[in-house]
Length: 244
Image (cartoon, rainbow, N blue to C red; front, side, top):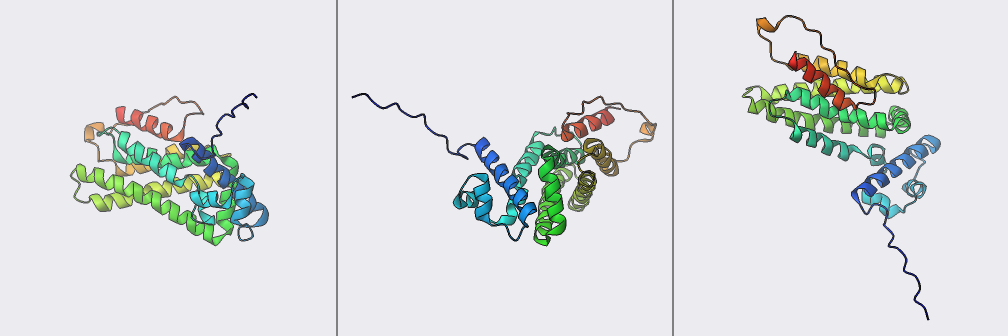
């Protein structure tokens, strides 16, 4: 009697960090398609799970509620923002760092155009999803304010808390302006160029006044490919400005 051949072990979906990210995004994509096709209220968690090829219990391992699925990568982006803060050089302009970090939000939208456009439609028509979007933006702003407050305090700024709150609000407003302009264009607008322009305004507004000797205008040219991620564009442009 011969031994039956052993089957290779099957890797369960979501068993690895990469697998969990893929499954979260699969659930999000399935949910968005169903919300658009059937309506948000008419779509059930069971239908979302089935469309993604998993069960109801798996859905609730990733999301607490149906409205959470629309912003599936929110926690990942916050973690990446924190990594950007931690990796920043101590002498780098903290507002510049914060702009580069929030640029990760725009990168995530640009990377999933179809989902982003459908989500934009949904948040404009479903009040509960609009509220969820506002809460998401508020969390990004609080993350920025916490980082900026710590950096401004290190710099001896007596108004660190207030300055951080105002700067974080300005960065969030610039981000939202660029994002909505891009979404309204159907993803056709140059999101990287718009973001570089908007964030440069914020950075300039919060930069310390230069000495009189530094007042002469300087032209700066940065050469980048269209595939360069947004946060890298911002970092490159501002590095060139700081060197000028």
